[in-house]
Image 1 (spheres, rainbow, N blue to C red):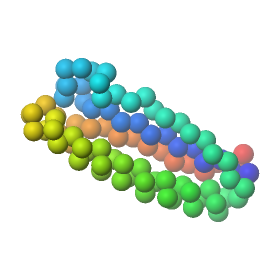
Image 2 (cartoon, rainbow, N blue to C red):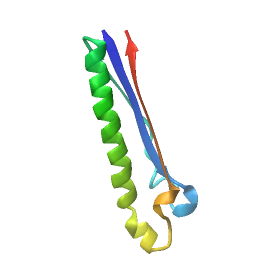
Image 3 (cartoon, one colour):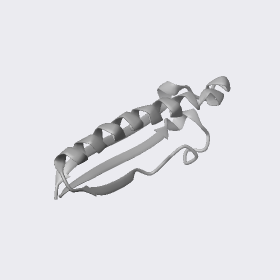
Length: 87
């Protein structure tokens, strides 16, 4: 058995908004079991591609903050990690 573990989180630099908790998301940690390393690695590859797209969509969705002069996409902190581990 193999376990796919992934972590995803994002936040906005606190200087970008008056409400420092508004744009914080606690890290999400998810575990999923696979019967083989190959299946785990295939899922890992798809998930990594999806998380990269999520970061791009999140940054583009903050145009309203940038229009207000409050923040730009460069102030977004996105972190993720995807690992396949033997069980």
